[in-house]
Length: 137
View 1 (tube, rainbow, N blue to C red):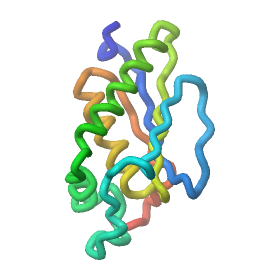
View 2: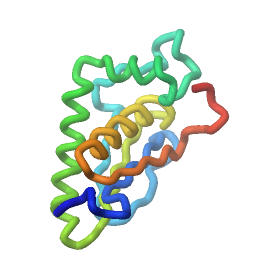
View 3: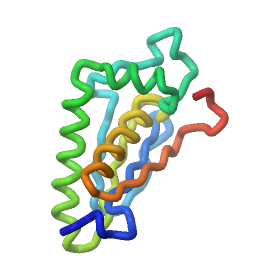
View 4: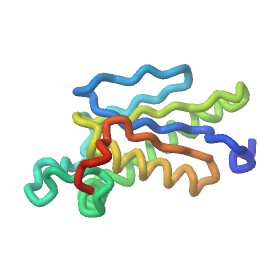
């Protein structure tokens, strides 16, 4: 199936914070819990405290983690496998990506996964549920 010919997103990514509750979703959901994946936490770096995953320094910090790109590749592989299964039913795959507060690592990883999938021709959109619009970026 040629996903890039589609006018609607095949994959929707929702980032969130586990401390604020897991979002409800429909079928075709992949849950990624970053609390158990070894992405460096920017909250542990004084220079990055208070910044969100939209800040370039935060994104660079998270993506510099030793297994970052391997983890991103695995997430994209899981998403693609689930999409290949659900596409015949014309279902959108929902990917929930959560960290503790939903403002740093989840945002960086969600944006990175969307960028990779879009580059592969799979229309993907991202919503950051717990990213506060007035937070420093």
